[in-house]
Length: 318
Image (cartoon, rainbow, N blue to C red; front, side):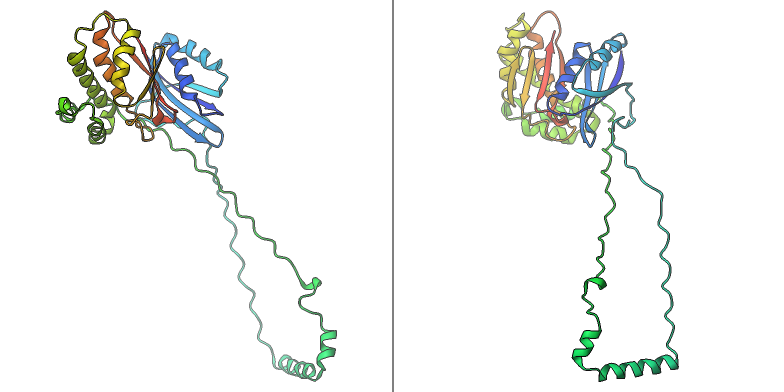
């Protein structure tokens, strides 16, 4: 298995995560994380996927055939390092410093003769009639004396470069915190969203997704034991329609399209980059997994509204 990072530049944001996620899923890759950033060049997509090394060429061919992408790069994913996007706008700084302004020239003090001349000229001006003075001396507001001052154009302000993607080390689920959040599950269900949000804030950043997934698995297993223990051996499509969708309706607006679950306005995916789709995946694993036989359940997160998508989409397969 290999982890790859897809860096792509596109002109339109709507549906970009869904389309690239479907291309990766069609080549056998599973989505690990994703990010969309607005840039002066366009929309910057960063997506980390995991799959077989032998499928890398097929993934590259699929991305090359995608008309939505202006350009892309397929790179090995790096753990614990932030890698700038290849198409991000870089802030250009100049090292030029203007020279200091010259000091003002000193004003020479008038000598005795100059002072005497000024006094004589002042007396002559005082003896001149007002009408004659106005005719001989040009007005200071005449067109020849007016020199317009050109306004100084401010230097262009360059836009700051987008913040680099910082990867958070993944940790195992905080089982004690999950047990505490679901201690009164039988009494609180289905009004457990406040407890799930509190769990999201209480655990470490690296344990968020794994803890929410474990909580979803516990809730799904509890629902299966309570109402569907006899419903085994079902087909996946029938199990999703009869069991999975009604259970998820308790938390968000759900639309089933084929084997894709479209989650609208997920309350667990509200902040930038903080996805809560792992809870819904865990719930389906605990609830629908035992109902189908004999194979297991595979859930692929295609896109999430916390990363800029219009809705969260989970692709389900056996």
